[in-house]
Image (cartoon, rainbow, N blue to C red; front, side):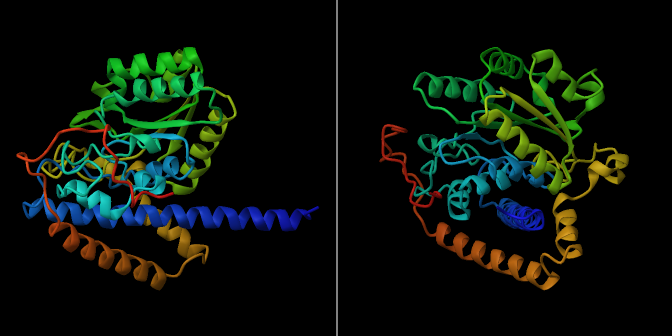
Amino acid sequence: MLASSDLDSRLEKSTQDNFIRAYRFMSAARVLEEKLASLYRSGLIKGGVFLGKGQEALSVSLGIHLQKGDIYAPLIRDQAGRMAFGDTILDTLRTYLGSQLGPMRGRDGNIHRGFPREGYYAMISHLGAMIPLVVGALMARRFRGETSVVGGTCIGDGGTSTGAFHEGLNAAAVEKVPLVLLVANNQYAYSTPNSRQFACKNLVDKAVGYGVTGYELDGTDLEECLRVVGKAVQTAREGGGPQLVVASLLRLVGHGEHDDASYVDPAHRQSPHGRDCLQLAEQILIERSWVSQSELSDWRKALSEDIEIAVAKVLREPTPNPAEEDWNALSQVELRDNFSE
């Protein structure tokens, strides 16, 4: 039997390892998205580019706690969660640059990527559509007799005003499916402030009305995100029904790369939820001597080099030829060689 000190030491080491692993996914997402923004400004990306700067801690906390066999339906700002769930730099770039070798074979825009057979669902819309989809998928798993499956998806504060949010969460509550729903309260629905979006004091208050478990957290604090979201996933997996997690944070960039975010009140940027979650995580790593500044610099340099190599590779790959495309989708074998096992 482990002594109390040995158990505490192991728990501390586990917490440290999980934090570092989550940080590395966050860092990879940030560096990759910085490159995507550059490619967009260079005219190499068709369509919009929507970055998750400021939301990486919340996003990664869901992806990192889901297991193989679970369902994950990320949104447009969930690059960190996607990578924690098994997505890769190469597949991300192939989707944004329209490579025929990507998971969506160069079609369906640049944000609708996934491997549905692996439980990694391609986004339909960020306005609540993924909630009833995940609920339906969880019901299907239940009918097949599959247990211990969790379905996770995300939404912004503006999306909580949609009919799909209401219908999906209501159905999840009635059926008591193991849904974990993250709400990134980034203070604006595009350019509409919270004061014009909802009248309740806090979005987590909606949990009571739907009869689900609710949590409120600081979305800039990686440690808190990992703890609270991890608890929500575990509770759902153990039969606790739907879990609603509301995180306060600020989108640190515009709605998309086409938007300068000039409508954001400067007071938000100076408030606690206007902090950069990546910088805060780095401070913790250094203060606790878990990682040195030089190691952080080396990681970022290595990431940048890997991304540049991947970009060069993808730019040489073929794009779809409409004259030859057969337009079949899931009826064909999916390209999944790069998806994490």
